[in-house]
Length: 341
Length: 226
Image (cartoon, rainbow over all chains, first blue to last red; front, side, top):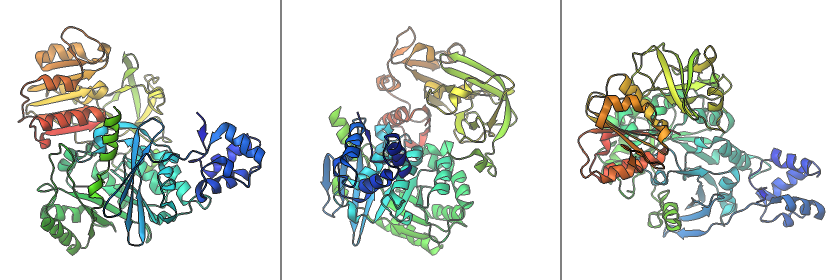
């Protein structure tokens, strides 16, 4: 099987050009063809000599992978299913909203984190995605020219696949790549501290942390990662960073009925987030098969939001999108995985 | 990769410790030890690094909290950054380790401990710390030589020590995975705590099974090796 050009950084492309005996600037030319133009084969890289293209084609393939399934919601949200090299599937959601088109990408096939409320976790861990497979989820959807925002909130824990995620961010934000502003990209983590520290050092993109409750004993029942990387450590690390005026830190909070929606939780959130300029995104829970958890009701959700805003923490409720197409991450790919088994 | 120095201001500060032992207790599985300098709760973890240029890895403590040494149990991962090196350490060598931390703690109440592979470590620590009364330990492995500390556990726990082996058979060993063993139990106790430790897929499958059989999710605490 030939190696893919798609997913390589400028440095990697330049190195392989030199290795093949091609001019050094061929690396930059390839990057522009791969990430900025509407082509899908090496043959279409027409500012490279025919001989160069033949040489490249003998060793490499372009590397785009088409989606095998698309579902469209009544609200315009689309869910794409992409096959991976390992014969598994990952999901990508494209969420249109007025003048924005946000793409939600996956960073792993399945997940190791085992959160109680997550459908992806029920697949277990199937494998890592390459940077090419991550970026392919943006480049290879029909809307790719109109994408305004990218969120790493699909399947998997991005900081458990740190090197490939950082590489994908480099491709998305470099001038030679997609040239997107890092301020249009948000990477969401469960709180893998070493990966988070490296990300904060090496990327300018926004950070979102899945919190879901401020209490240690509750969080460890929902999210086993709490045992290894306690929220206290995550918060302490975040407090030590200067996020500046442009970079955003947000906390994701799925609101469960009778579990994490009380005034006690509001109080504790205010206490632990004191000193961090952040936002809380409240998320409605859409039950997955076999879950013992239930989403909170609309009144309690609104009240919870208002209480947090009254206390000075900017809090929003994320709009639920694509509910009619299994938009909760992991449902579609799990169905496909089971069908193939 | 992040530098270990980035952790210097945290309570999880890495400090140099001197290796006191390294025993290969099964092919590719090692117990590495160093002198204990902090109290800890059995079930807690430590971060370890070979040097300050590498990101530390997390391991469950595999020794009792009254013992003079801290021990950790690990599989050598051929493509791993730490374990191939750690498998070769000898007494007198230095490694970097944090003080123990973590909230995977049990108490004196009745509980089932469920582990796969080296996920036995926190439960062995609990056992060695004297809190194995009222506990049932279920250990799942692929091969018979992966029942670490088997003789000691069998002698001490008797019928409360259940071995499940998916790839080989032996007397007193349940033939199959832990989930199959649990499925064959007619009535699972629903008023006790369940502690799970191992790979994600085992934790998720066992947790789902327990919840489906009436165990409140609040009674289930999991630690995943990732």
